[in-house]
Amino acid sequence: MDKDLNYGEDYKFIPATSIGSGVGIEVLPDLYQYTIQIVNIVLYGDTSTKEFVLIDAGMPKSAEEIISVVEKRFGPNSRPKAIILTHGHFDHVGGIIELIKYWNVPVYAHALEIPFLTEKQNYPEPDTTVSDGLVAKMSPIFPNEAINLGEHIKEIPSDGSIPFMPDFRWIHTQGHTPGHISLFREKDRALIVGDAFVTVKQESLYKVFTQTKEISGPPRYLTTNWLAARESIEKLEALNPLIAITGHGLPMKGEELTSNLKKLVDNFEQIAQPKHGKYLS
Image (cartoon, rainbow, N blue to C red; front, side, top):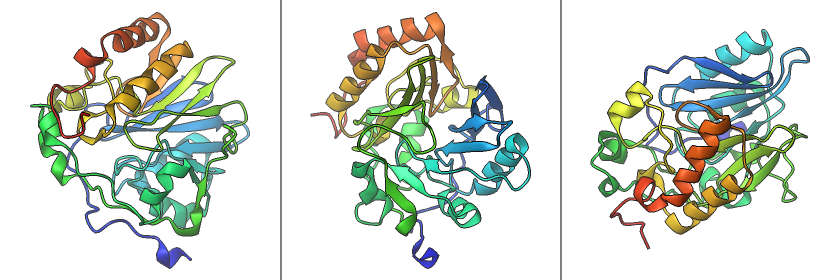
């Protein structure tokens, strides 16, 4: 029942933004990235058929903006076939409950992410010690309590397929969260990364605000398994993606992506992993 849907008690608007906020980029004819404050949502689908899927659900209090973006791209009263979550952190599920109530669509996530989306388990507290950057220092204000999506949340099929995205498959890219997934399409090697790696130094408020393009590992202050995070990046690099849409930052393509991803794998400790932090094993 919809009355069961609720956010955690710490749910609130987060006063962080960037110069990219409100900007949409058609990365491919069927892949559209839109930035809400400091995070990206992705719309997958053909604008001529109006059949589409929403990947991730933005910052807290962003549902109206997401609906507006959807209707601008796919037409009035259009709604997705489903919402796919790369993971359940606050900045990827911020508008999810209002969107479920408005559209009445299923939401899919990895089985290991479901406890955080059904009020069974809170995410670990953010780690402020991973960086001197201001975003890392302000991370204690970020919501980390479990939300409840009730009967609307479904486990994504275990065979790697993605509902309503027949040409994509999901890849388990844990580390940032236990059930984090990335989405990959073999025919053009397009990758929807989530936060397995990002293209902005997410710990730095200045770099987040200016959207300085720079490959980086998952946001440090919320990453709890660094060994798994490294293995996930290696897994994605082995796919040799040609296009990457990340949860934070600008898209990367071609040689820029290939060389930067190789650099990230080869220099993981220097680029991605914090020198200290409570989640370092």
